Amino acid sequence: MKLIIAIVSNDDSAAVNANLTEHGYMVTKLSTTGGFLRAGNTTLIIGTEDEKVENAVELIKEESKKRTEVIPATASFDINKFAAYPVEVQVGGATIFVLEVEQFIKA
Ligand code: 2BA
Image (cartoon, rainbow, N blue to C red; front, side, top):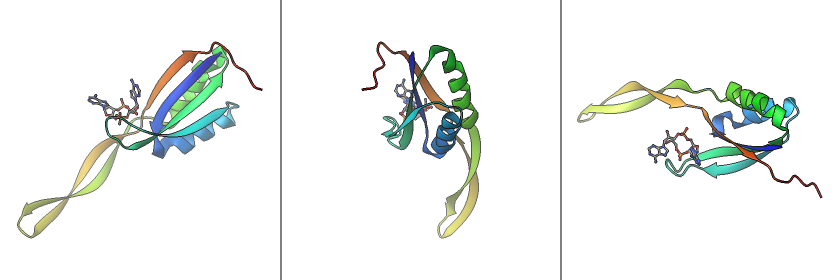
């Protein structure tokens, strides 16, 4: 048995969670904070059989693909004059750890 720890953006977490649960995986969702950006993200923990790990990773990837979004930003170029320039930011992606489980007990 393996334990998958997947850190995803808050924006993707509902879709990743739904994709996993619809395919029969048991998921626990934790609200977490990235140490670098200190912004909220979501950590999903999934306990599953060894042969189901690959599929779980694919399901996570499907809903957390890295993509570029264009957001409006305001830049000042002169006193009292402002212009809006779109800014491209990269969002999404997942950081996934797969750990060996020594024991799995449901009491
Ligand atoms: P990612 O590498 O995609 O990481 C996204 C989030 O996943 C991280 O949020 C952190 O919560 C978790 N994470 C990633 N790798 C991890 C690991 N080896 N162990 C534990 N948790 C891990 P943040 O820490 O806020 O980082 C956000 C983004 O900032 C990272 O995106 C990376 O592109 C960059 N980054 C993180 N640490 C950095 C550092 N020390 N120097 C430069 N850039 C860094």
